[in-house]
Length: 360
Figure (cartoon, rainbow, N blue to C red):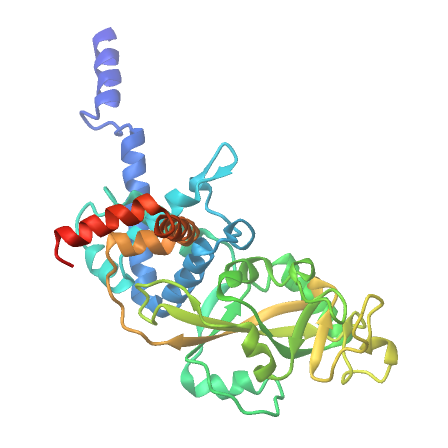
């Protein structure tokens, strides 16, 4: 009887016999890694276009010198004792292959092993992060989206449009629907630099982040795309993107027609055309100033691409791109050293000797 109990216990530990196998931590990690690989494979097979754009926006925030403010949310796996290890994060980003190549490599057995940091980061951004989800808008529906904003000046159509999809059961969406029933809504454009959209798409537009305060503090939007486009210059995203390395984005936002939205064309009340902290007078026609970020939500993303071919960069080029400030400082120091050497008589003497030696 005692021997049988001992054998049963040994079988449970070693996995021998018909008892359940004890799952070790390593096996658990392997199963979790394989699951992540499977999730990414399915996502890339079904919507590689949206995944590529979302990753490109994230990479733009990573490469920005303002990463501490625009790279939010930040991946926890690159935070140690409360400090953000941006260099380690950039190294993983730089190692990430193009999604078309990744989709081929991901078929290899045990792909997760040796690529854990890349898979974990991609899975965090593309699958684990909360809403919104990117929904591709087909070309035939572009006109419908653009006509949401009654612009008078024709502009070039974007290359891509994505709808930002939120769960209708979320508390924020339910609160939004209550406001819309009371006040109604309209649409307008908002332009911003490429690196800002990682934060914008996850946390929404925030009035305290705006630097333009000529007509008061708040979020500036316009009914004319030509007004918003200059605020969305082409920025460097991801060099391996299927859409090219240079992108610009403009948000199509839904705005609640609330008195806290300052404008001239939605209400005859003159108090809606000016804020108490304005130094430029009334909000211009075709402009909207939202002083409460709860009253505006990004509904669509217009993407403009400079379709340059993807080229694999060398390690040196990648390092230079990731350390622009350091390269600038080093170049400046070299220039100062060259100027000092030029005016130094000893340096001039050695330079003349060198020229004579080589008959120059």
